Amino acid sequence: MSSNPDYLAAPDRVETGFLSPWHWLVTAVLLLAANSGLRAQVESPYPPQRWFSAIHFVDDWQKTMVDEGGALAYDFGPGPYVHAQTLVRVRTAGVELVRTHQGFADPRVPVLTTRFEGDGVTSEQVAFAVRQPIEDTPPPTAFRRLGGLAGSAAWVIADRPADPAFRAVAWGTAREIRYQLRVPTRARRTVVLGFADSYRTPGGLYRGLDLRVEGAAQRNFDAMASGVTNEPQAVAFDAGDEDGDGWLDVAVAVPEDTGDTNVYLNAIWTFAPEVEVDLQRVIRGDATDAAEVYVDCGRDLARIASTHRFDVLEARFDGPDVAPIVEVDTRRGLQVRDGALVDRGRPHILVRS
Image (cartoon, rainbow, N blue to C red; front, side):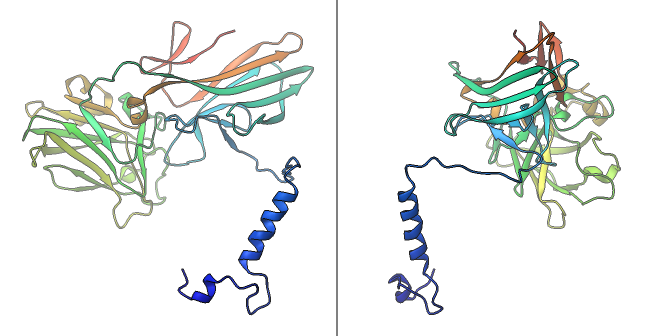
């Protein structure tokens, strides 16, 4: 900010002879006033190849997107950010439909309509969100996340049998990930952190992580040191509640020499001192039942949500012999149960006709 009092006086012209910023502001206001009765028209002669439209509420914990093809888009992770790892779309068997329109009837109302046509078939698909307050108070958990809550429920596809928590990921953009784990005061525990990187490749940009667990020495970790993308790995710490507050502090921070300042963490387990911890059994999921605390990282927003969230994709078709198909492309470990696709025991996708 300038301390020159002449600047605050806003002269009509500066020494170069150009109009001052104050003139441009007044001119813009006058133009808007003169055209206030006209309906604005925005042209896009060179639109991007891909885009996303938001259908969530302003204060929503779930930020659902719809892609340019009308598909519900979920599970954006820490690389690549612009790729949804779960897509839910409706198409027709044997007919290639082409998008002819996509837009909001009112930009203030998050209801998105996409229209298609092809081979005598037309379709209108409307995407919107619905929410319902959660009446019951959620039970207290044995852990909590501090600071940013960014995460994804589907980021990793393990190439070998692994605990389902490795699919999800908590991530921080240029900031550390912090969790606290409930333990008896001054108690010691074995803490295991699980990692799997689905983005980086061997020989690529170095993404190191500084791992800090209360009562244990700090360690530096690189998931790509194994040379295998999507490889589940685990690191154990002999930890203790040194400050006596009944919580074990866990942090994944950005080291100074990293080439990527985005950090991530897939899973956490804590075990009593008398439990013999085999890291391979932990990775396979065989030791999870013996854990006192088990954290499926990356699902933190859903755990503290005050509303149930439902996304609706209503598809209507017009044409001969139309056979609609719901297509799901995901890294989640979905299972079919009672006519629904279930994720970790909870209904995730329901189809009604």
